[in-house]
Image (cartoon, rainbow over all chains, first blue to last red):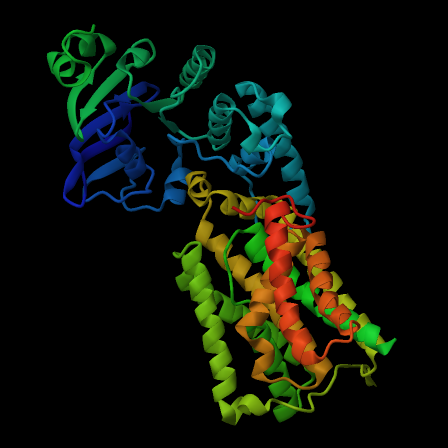
Length: 254
Length: 289
């Protein structure tokens, strides 16, 4: 089954083609890597999928819904959880609160619940705190729960951002350069988490500019250059693709 | 003694202003520069209802607060797309508009001549006219406002507001309808500012447009920043400090022609010092960026 289907997506900024007639699919319960050099339009694609940018042309079908014209918050609610290349946390609130913000509330987030401090809200809050703590434990940030998010290291912030979208329980994770700037050890943690997501039935698509890093983890690799798809296939197929070798990696490597 | 009570009443009214603006600016991070217009609407509504139609100030107070909320929603709605400086400019513009209306719609507001003889509140036929009873009335409203804003901010709802303050895009990315929350915050903030405006009008028994200038909005914003954005205790401290400070200057025996500009200068100086040494305000945790 197809989880996410991108059809003939086109986006230009002041005449410059950022995404040029791009089509690809993300199958259910798979890991798809979007690879390409800087400026090849990877993040633009993610920004369009998550609704922060509007495409000039094209369709995006997610889980049976056409989401191209929806607001970002509605897209998130449908089950698309994304992270950002330069990490977007809520810096001046606690790590635990950052995760709590991602969790669903039935009534507790309502204005009236807040004003009258309803029992239901307090119960939901207590339940969600437990859930949030578990999520923090899952990504290995349990003892940082009361720290302000701004005081975390780069790697910890990446993990916290991940915990926050985990809280959303999305159907698909869109991770924008999840391993950029990480130490090898944290990189392994991140990849093992991504594999765990897949094992638990989730679908993952992520962006990475380094082709080597994604070979071991991706089921499918899509290579972009100047907004165009120049190759698509399994890691094995990509390794042998001349187009990729020429345009992206350079003839001598690999 | 009466003078002291008078100061406390004024400080109490400013605490309501500051708490309600803190919800908008300190907790949600929206740069709103026209808070006094909601007070203006509240004050004129309940005063005019009482003077022209003989309607009880209690009903006037609620009507004024509701009209202020509606104005808050009207301002917020188109401004939701604006961020930072632009929102500040839009709300600033609103401040100028409402002030001009109050000043120039002479047939309704009597313009710069103001509205004299505004009656006070009464409970069960007992007129709240002396300062002591008015102080109790104001303190009651201070408590109600404090409790309401504390409940609102101390909840999952309030956490979302802080999330919007910290990062709007991230808030949207986790499924928060940012515009809805901003709208609610403006409505609630305007509601309490409307109440405070009405309390002021019935206390001073005279209002004119000069009480609702842009400078007043800026003073309230200063109180929020002084006490600490996102800190409720800070709102008390900020409001009290900036109400009492100019009063202390009186005791220095300066002529009022010197004292008034001196007040502004001291505000400015204090703000500069504070921004250097304690950008989060006296009681706040949230750093202004």
